Length: 297
View: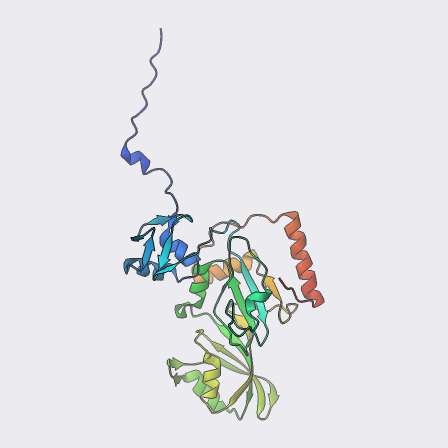
């Protein structure tokens, strides 16, 4: 006896909702490009500042790299999501470099020394002044960069600073209680004596924000002169002793994970295993660092 084949259920419109959506959420793509946090990009969309393929975008829209996207009437050039997960570099910035990608005056920039990327770009986590040296982080993830830079992150930034002038305990107390600057109240959360004596001394000081020239302005408000300034720590990240001025090193997956937790950012894709060639290149770079050779592009 011939058995009847079971009838398949008819496909309805609701079934199509079960398929994977095409593209990525617009605010996520904009945040990854370093244009602001995801929440800031959501506000930009709500305010009608984002145009996709000639039409005003709305929350919930998804986009692909082939779409034409404008923010505040400027066409954006977007890169695909990183296939290898978030990358983070630590760069030991020398004095005399600016933190822009290019300079009309032709001065060297911090980006000149960084390794090249394919389909991605390095985004600076904050800036250091032209005459300030030390620890500067770069990442391929715009949302991570913006979260780390945002004042609400309250991440320690520790500096080693040389002061010319008389510094007493009362001055250090004032600096920790708060000084009213042009852009509001600012203070150090800690001030510790370093080397030196008399009117030419070193101090370690910590701020929780990354306001423009905040460290220099705090000290200068007390009538003393800042002659040297170096950032030595960002959160729980220090400059490794073998990373000399003008050199960079990649953060380990564990360090990146801790940084993402601090910033409240999901790591996303787990980094793939390095190929043998990549492992060899990384070992070669570490060997150059320890030998004191500066890496250039």
